[in-house]
Length: 369
Ligand code: NAD
Ligand code: TYD
Image (cartoon, rainbow, N blue to C red):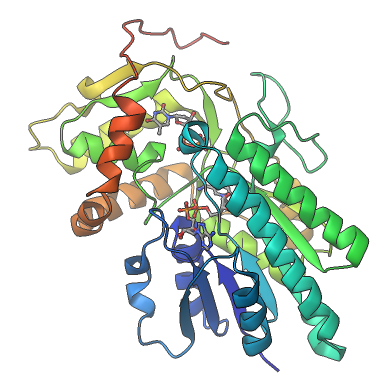
């Protein structure tokens, strides 16, 4: 019986870390279906090339015939669904692709998985899982002293990205409730680590700082995110896949709440230490407050108690160890950064930042919304 898994979006940031960890752990064969959008990069999986356990399929999750064929041919024991449009700022600039991939694409996968599941019997049927990788952004925003998001926090998505992910979560829930599809959902906080596309806060700030460009902090920089090292997200997904209860959702987070300003300051201090002869030391002088993101969520925080107590998951990295590792990875891989920041990346930077007027006000640390 096959132990193959079908991963979608495995050439993106989290997906490629997941595939590499899965292969390194010798958990079984992986089929990776990825459209290779601007965020997907086959080079992330260079280490898997030539590995007989790894198959790459260049294709779209919206292609129902392709998805059905892959399920029939490979008979995976699980679908692990990462593929998505994932950047909030891009969802504000152009929401349509988010609705197509995140909602319609998840629908296509659910329908194909449902048909496939109906054709299975015995142990193969008992083992099958559809794991949907989602985000804490579906829960909306928290005030400074609100308790962290837990699995029954009401959904209140605020950005087009969050709304599209919330919609897809609801579809997954319904496919379990109505059709009995054996689903699992994970809602994770902000990830950081190797292979993250430099449009997201941490790699963007590293990349700008290294080339002496302004570090664009939105608004007052006191928005809070709950950071998790990507490898810990991957171990959480493996734990849920192995032991999660069907139809359940599991919050994933590392308990590392930081303001964006704290993140940027820590990053600059580490770069000062690791690149002491750079002409841009002290890097913090590059910090520039710019016009805020419309509808910007103020605070995210995750309560991961359920995952910890039911499945005995714990993150391996603290923010300090994971953050240092991440910066060292970007410093050691300039060719990767160079490769993904040519061409279309430059036009996105122009589109998103050129019209963001720098704002002079330096906020006080105690300020709240
Ligand atoms: P990413 O943008 O880095 O990668 C997305 C991948 O999906 C890319 O390889 C892209 O080519 C592929 N893709 C996009 N549209 C596709 C389509 N129609 N068909 C096939 N492939 C397609 O995203 P990420 O940061 O790795 O996030 C992966 C998943 O995890 C997403 O579902 C996201 O919502 C979720 N998530 C991300 C974070 C985070 O901090 N990055 C946190 C929690 C949850
Ligand atoms: P981001 O990495 O886009 O993740 P998300 O919006 O999904 O949380 O942004 C993280 C935080 O950093 C968020 O509060 C927005 C802020 N931010 C900036 O201040 N400047 C930037 O250039 C970017 C990309 C993000």
